[in-house]
Amino acid sequence: MKYTVVLPAAGSGKRMKADRNKLLLELSGKPIFIYTLEVFEQDLDCEGIWLAVKGDERELIEQYVERYGIKKVKGYATGGAERQDSVRAGLEMAGQPEIVLVHDAARPFISPEVIRELAERAHESGAAIAGVPVKDTIKKAREGVITETVDREGLWMIQTPQAFRYELLMEAAQRAKDDGFLGTDEAMLVERMGHPVKIVESTYENVKMTTPDDLIYGKAILASRLQ
Ligand code: C5P
View (cartoon, rainbow, N blue to C red):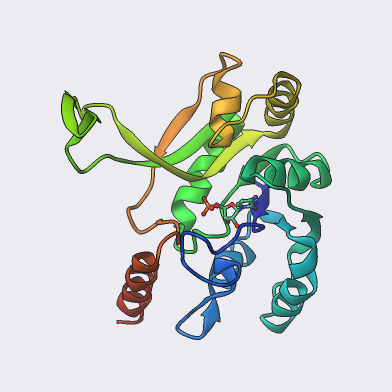
């Protein structure tokens, strides 16, 4: 199933303890976001990439895109204060594809098989998101004391990509804006409209580069892929 992808890339380096946008940090000599772009560049079903970037980083990011020969980038949107704002800016520029994927530029290890499955499920039912079953024991605590051990059955850690029929996501995004609702992912916007969202089992490798220890894991993933 053909699709267009919107990649929010307008974050900071705060939790990474970096002095700049963490996506510009290098893993084995290449910026994190270039790995992400390369996955979509090589996917024949990807018809175009829209990047949401900070205004003052656009030139630098464009230079990297050119240097690494990424041809599918169709344009750049100006990101906002919240991730949801950046995604919305990207979606508004993306034309009107039948299927749109939203994927964090900070997740460079997404599997092409998962992308394919997501696009197909979204085509069938409107919305499908990537996730992995929770591995750890989950408890709730209040004031330092456990109040509940949560049943792990049916609990998922949610990732991106999140895939949608474009019209459905745009309607959900408009309603969220009208209601002043801020979600932590795109699926939440669709869920609150009462529309079912399918889950596609992804891989644990599809980690978001968030804190410094994620870089260690990222380097290990790259090394394992070279073996
Ligand atoms: O901060 P976090 O890692 O959760 O951000 C997820 C993705 O959203 C990253 O690729 C980041 O660059 C992007 N982002 C954005 N605009 C923001 C905040 C985050 O495009 N205001």
